[in-house]
Image: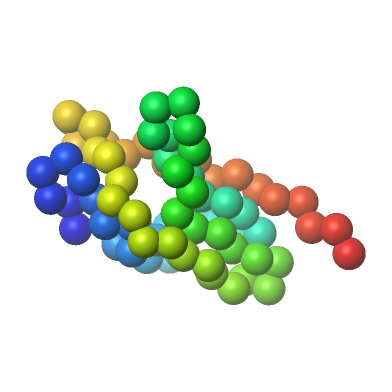
Length: 73
């Protein structure tokens, strides 16, 4: 839920899960020059989430990056 200028990461995780995350990946947003990772998806499609308050832009958008992760066996 978006409250003021922050969003709860669990709601964003749910939207991403049902949207486009199909393989091993890290999902993050930028907080200044640092990555704020709030979701990881393993090769077995296991989700590892981290609770976070994510900063929402003034125009109510949230730039999110889904980065594929190489799996080595």
